[in-house]
Image (cartoon, rainbow over all chains, first blue to last red; front, side, top):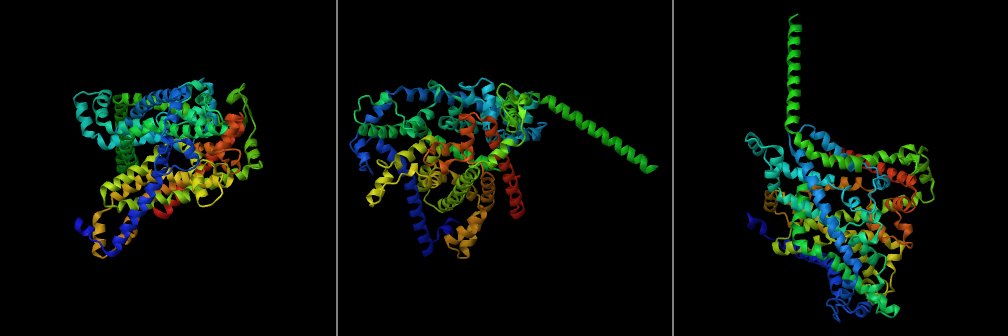
Length: 298
Length: 322
């Protein structure tokens, strides 16, 4: 069978050559910016400025990283992001799993109505301003709760988890357990959850990445710098060019300051992306899995 | 007489059957009361944070005063909507929003399909996996970092892009500060970030293509190119259409984050889109009612678009979302 598909005409060889070449070029175009940030963060900023860094780092230096490590705002942001990610993920994933399970049960009376109750919010919503006013009225401004509660248990996530439960937890299993006198809660905790490790991993990673990368809610709802997550600190440095002056106390001239700022930017990008880089093998596997489950029409 | 009796019997039977079904449902609800408790936290969160703001959106038709509250504020009808429609910047904002989104769609939508078809023809498994690993990676970069990267790469005096331009004898371009470059940069950076990840769903569809179709095509002497065109592409058409419907339905809901982060006074004329405008007026300038009206206007267009596009897709191709 494979030999048949492996048979190649001249045209097919040409096709393969073009295909591999184009894909390789495309891949390099995607890879190069990431690679460049990495080498630039270790290079002499004067050489970045004059455009001499291309393929390899030059004038190796850890100066940028040393300045970043000395700055407290970034570490406070790191800590805050970690806190928001852990608390937010725990809350949202538990609520998602609990909401998705009944929706996967055929004998759950009101399943369709509940489904619509959730799905409707995908098509229509009150929008930013009414939501903001509500959070304000609830005195949630400037608290962690404004970041972790309102967005918990997203519709898409509920649907993905429900699809997973439907396809992996056989009805017969539940029926057998119930005959043995098992309750819904015990069945859910003792049988369903242990069988759902892959989808729990997908959900946890979705949320961790979402919280780690998100900045919008924090920008709207937080106004104290000591509570800012990493992405807000990053925005000040990367987008608004506000490098903390304590990071360059010893830099004299304006021109030198500009250069050091660039170096700090490259370093900050690497440090901010490091946790996700470390998680990347898992991220890749489970995000792909999530897309696959989500793509089953349900 | 006889038929009436029969009818009565049938009715009785029917009634007792519905009664039985009802009591069965009641038993089921009682048996599964825990499941309702499971749903409770999510239901409360949705009621409070999704449905209550839908009630709160009435401030779009009111002159909202914080002291009077949502209900106590005075009705003004469509005043805010009319004010927006008649504003000098209404058409520019609409144009910015639609163009940004259409460009993203026109250039961003086909590329993942093409890349997926190409990847699917790659028989060297390890290399294919390597390529996938690389091209999925940008998806995980935060918007802040992405815009920060644009900033450092495109910087007029230190960025690598302007170094390249200078190398070929050109003048440095002020990319981030230019109105004309805003849309191309937005679209290109989007393609860079999301193409790889968007291939996953097409690759999943391609994995489901029956190999016998390919074998039959080979027997008939079809080249690889022809098989891609006549076997692979038609097989993933339903997936393409569904994603197209979703994308078209979302034309008016451009993401806020990237546009906002890329926005500056210098490119404002091109980067001022509905979501950034709502943020600017509502959150920064506290014009709650006016900005809520603009947001509501946008939300309504979204619903109408999605329903219309879905209906059209259903009629034309018999594929639809619902």
